[in-house]
Image 1 (tube, one colour):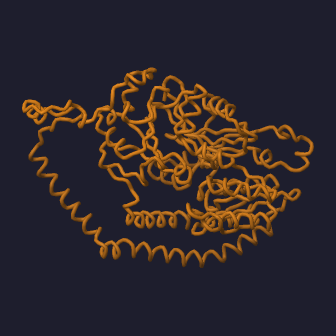
Image 2 (image 1 turned 120 degrees about the vertical axis):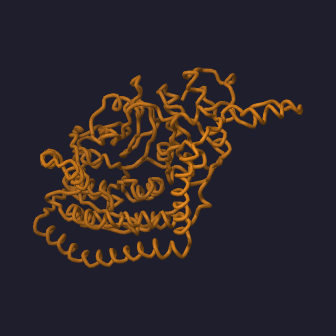
Image 3 (image 1 turned 180 degrees about the vertical axis):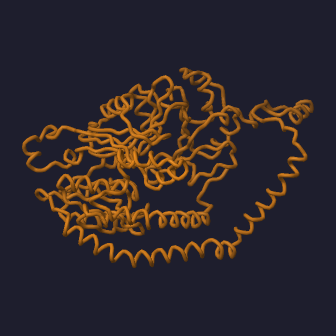
Length: 525
């Protein structure tokens, strides 16, 4: 948004800037429409009568209702409310919802423990017979997030580059990467929290010292990169290089308001946005009819937003808005206008502060492609940063009809888009000692990348059954690669499709049921 956009709602609404067309006026902007300030104070009886009979601006007149339609829709709504009230009873909720889910979860855990033992022996047998140890030198890499597909692909790529791979994951997650032939060792570490992350840092230090790890890649999937940035200084003292920015860099990239402010300083276009620091600011925005006519999303920013990121689409009705956290000066939120255009997400690899590769995926279709506008914007953005770093991060951008690239989000970590390309970035990020000795001041390996579209097996089977297109399925299998399966590493796909998908779904439902008990942590309107 331009410099004319104020910092508070009380000076100018977000929708008035759209009518001005991005003008430079600030002090002359009209205030936000609010029913409590629509009229001047008066004690006259005529004014009171006029105020009662004529609605203030921003309020819609009540529309006549069809009595027949209202009568017919009343009974289903009444029955639905009765069902919701019935299942919200503590005893009914326990008997019909929680107990079956817990019972199913226990059975899945029991079956998983029974199947896990033969899978472990099968992995060791395949690794002994077929996997060749191609480790050159003493290079070892540590990757976290072992239950995710991103970590699995990272492990396979570093294994192919001749690096010994160690994977870790927090407690309570599946062990997807532990069954991969590319993984040499697998560890479980305690999950960090907002109050205590010492145990997590100590666990990483222990792994680095024991396995003599020289390179650490935080994926930002199951652990926020904030805690990995805290651990970076401790690991670098042990001689382990971390593929993530320092704490200041993580606070910058994971805070959308700072990214937009940097773009404004450098003259890059940004979407209309507004920082809100109180519940009353959002209520006043909803009193504006023009604001309700547009689409916006809200994201938490500041120090709290760097730890746990929440991004929600703003509903049309204020009563349907529920924010998972407080709204205050210490916990601000950023309101961003959904600009019309094409939306994309990126997987950007950065080495020494310079972009060495990027894959752009369309959010609507999910297909990867190279976009020159997005690549040029990323190179310009990284060239303006005052610090250098190594890492993998993702941007959410929108290309407007006027061909402007507008940033809508940024996160440090490995996105799922990473599986859609093949590259030699692993040799660049973690080169061998001989390559570093011969070329210490520049890249010893030329960056090379090939975009390879991947497919998701359940989605492909669903589309084949619905569309009766066997030819399309065969074409997809021959020309694309599956997201999890690999011919030389088949066990992770078996674990993922037979156990992890169902276990993740049940854990998600149980988490939602558990979070429904703590409604006091949510901000309602």
